[in-house]
Every structure is written in C-alpha cells, then in structure tokens.
Length: 312
Ligand code: F6P
Image (cartoon, rainbow, N blue to C red; front, side, top):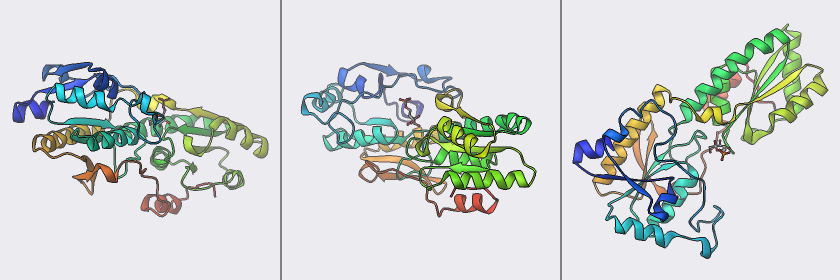
C-alpha cells in the first residue's frame, strides 16, 4: 500500500477475509494512514478465511454449484482494478492461478509458516515460526535436563518439515523427525540410549506435525525406554505475535516488489525470494506444487555431521 501510493499515487482496495471479500464485494480502501504502524504486528488488518469459493481441483469446492469464480470476476471488473495481489501459501496461490486463467491479473506473495511454496526459498512468517519453535525448545531444555526426561516438541508445517528442521538445528535438538525422512521408533530409542551411556539423561526431539503426533510418540518412547517422556504441541503459538526483523524485512521487500510488478502491468507471477534476491516466478509453476525438505540438502547433511539424528 505504501509503495503503490507513494511511488505511483495508486489507490489500493483491500478485500476483507481474503477471497470471501472478493466474491461478496466486501472491500475497504487502504490508505497510507491505515497501514501505518502495522509493521510490528502479526495477523492481518483485512482478516482471512479458509472457506473455498472456487472449483479448483483438490480445494473442496469442485462442484459447479459452489463455484463463485464469475462473481469474483464481476467484482474485480466493477471496481475497475488493474491487478489483484494475493498473499498466502500453496492454497491461496493455487486459487490465484485459477483466477488468473479466468482473466483476473494476479501478483502473488508467498506467505506461510509452512515455507512450502514452490519457487521461493522462504515465505513470510516462516522465520517467526522458527523463532518461536526454537525459543520453546531452548526453554524445554531446563525441564528435560532437571527431570531426566525426553521432551518432544511438535511443530506445525503441514506436510513439510521446514519448521521442525530449522528450529531443531537452531536449538540443538537431539532428534529431528520430519515427513520427508522416514524414521523408526527403534532409531529414536537408539539415540536416547546412546545419550544415556554418555551420561546425558535427557533428550529433546523436534517433531513436525506431518511426521506424527507428539503425545502418542511420547507414550511409546516412555513405554519402550522406561524414560519419562512429555510432549508439547506448539500449535498456533507459532503463528502469532510480533514478526521477527527478518520477516518484517521480507514482507516490506516483497510488498514493494509486488507493487512494482502490478504497476508495470505484469501479472501471472509471484514475487519470490531466491538466491538473496527477488525473482518473478510464474504462478503455473507454483500452483499445486509443494516445496519439501530435500534429505540430501546442505542443512540436513550439516545436522547429521554435528550429531543430530533423523530417527532412522
Ligand atoms: O498452513 C499453516 C498451518 O499453520 C499449518 O502449519 C497447520 O497444519 C494449519 O495451518 C493449521 O490450520 P488451522 O489454523 O486451520 O487449524
């Protein structure tokens, strides 16, 4: 909003609650004053919803009766808009791609703590979620060490293991369990026993939600190892509160770039952060694809090299 209004004198209309505001024509003019002082806040001024309005395969609204694409196109035209900037993860950008194909010029911005948007090394929100998860693991060390327990920290991330991997490496977790790397309970127990032999009577396990349930795993580990085990599910704590400086920088940068792309009349792309710079990636290369952890990546190799187990 700031770039568009200062750089080009453009007007910016915001739709409330994401695509719901678009199909229901629930909109508000976003002025410079309205977006002042939001840099340090989490959440969204406009609100959001996970409801499905468009017949995009796999999003739950594939019936022509519930498809409201035509309304979206009409509302977009009624306001004589030049472009629609869509901020979100895989689901949002897949729907945005379908709207582009129906004639609405789209500029996407990757934003999801899951960090699984294809085409972007990092999405807005990921760094904040990693910070919360790593800080939580740091704090759980006290109880783990004092009570000689296994502490399992379950992170979000849907089908991707990015949050657990980054937070686990950052806080020195003993075991990191992610959906991309198959593990066994035997593999986890080996680590716990090896640590005991070395006089370490506690272990910290970072568990991605896509790899299993913390509570069930804690019970199995306790039953089979005899060591007291507890699970902590971080849940939506990872999605709230003030964003980290890295996320503020990324959001500012991508917002600026998205404005310029839209003002230049380009569309059908998302502004993505790769190789220390912003790149315009075609939406068709993003829609329906997920960016998952590569088990041969440098970070996984590094984690293994410093003694972290992936429970294999
Ligand atoms: O996609 C973001 C995310 O936080 C996932 O990590 C998680 O699986 C999901 O959303 C939770 O969704 P909800 O807030 O609808 O329960």
